[in-house]
Length: 121
Image (tube, rainbow, N blue to C red; front, side, top):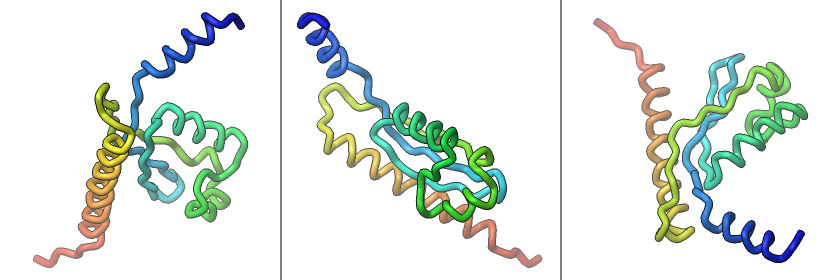
């Protein structure tokens, strides 16, 4: 590879659009969803696809379900994406994603709470 090509590749990499956000890994066998965050949504989606293809559980906390229902019963769900701003630092981007994760985990807790609440009339 000539030097100019390497330089162009490096420049293209630095100027790429960075997409992060919140995703879920859903088990269709029991409808359980694990909510996670990432600073690289396309990369995370690829890693999940590789895990399914090689039948290697991506998260220790879901190993029981992975063994019980099988890799094909899991899916990757993008819940919310955010683009890293041109002037945003890595730390600022990480902080934004952490705040989003907190919001989504609160939503999940609230949904579970409401699901188990019995209403008497």
